[in-house]
Length: 124
Image 1: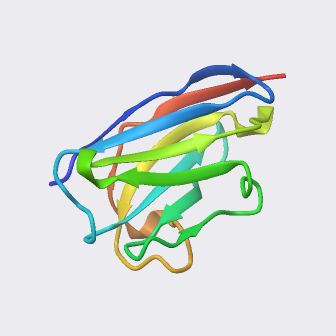
Image 2 (image 1 turned 120 degrees about the vertical axis):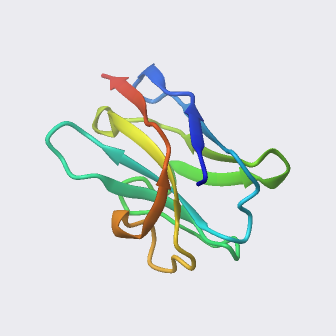
């Protein structure tokens, strides 16, 4: 059982930046695709970034060019750098380990392990 522990999040003004971190309990490099999801109140959980085992990344149009997913295998840590944040980015954010490969992006039905979630609130 892989445990994913998140940190980061909080409140930020529109246009600002925030970095989320997700530490895995073991080295999962090359075993799982990694992703970030978010869920706003009353909305479905959506994938906002994926990092496949070959290093390829995918983002939906809503965050492309503003969000960047990366990892540090030496630290078993996944990151989500979020720039130029908008009020509509306000949501609970979750990291996840997914079945690999994930050539079509991050989708909840393929998630094997979830992080505990962290709130990001963007004020206008």
